[in-house]
Length: 200
Image: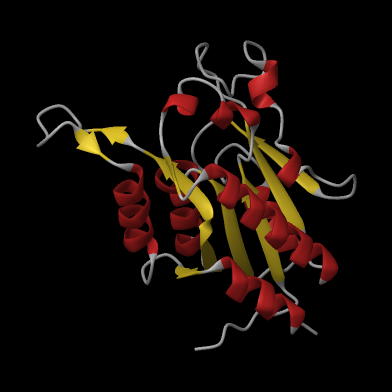
């Protein structure tokens, strides 16, 4: 089935920040590999720019003092990775929680610009990407989530759970499966890029 995108489509780039290359995340295995995720994000951003469609950047300013995404305690971690560096005329929203809609003007901005469809990429699949995707779907947007344009790390099991935890691939695939068909359509990066070439 072919993917069709309209001129009323915007890209949401979530939390592509240096903190995910630092401890504690640096000791965890990402799936897909973080370099491949970042390359796919970069190609998606470029495809949106080539199509003259809006790219909206979300940056996470953690309020937790030990977080590598805390801009005061970890200014290096808060920095945006080069693969997702915003252009001067691109919109940026700063959030403090998982959802890109809470505490920001993202919803207001999208409605004012009459955006009907969202493509979402970023970090991480089961956290800020998932929360933002769920809210976007509930708020009425058609959402496409790039399965290889987001990534996830391994996690320990919750207290009382079975086993020690779950590997990164399982976490990633379960998160995508929960979202697909309910809050979004999960697609590969190459299909998004191909669809953007056909936007008129």
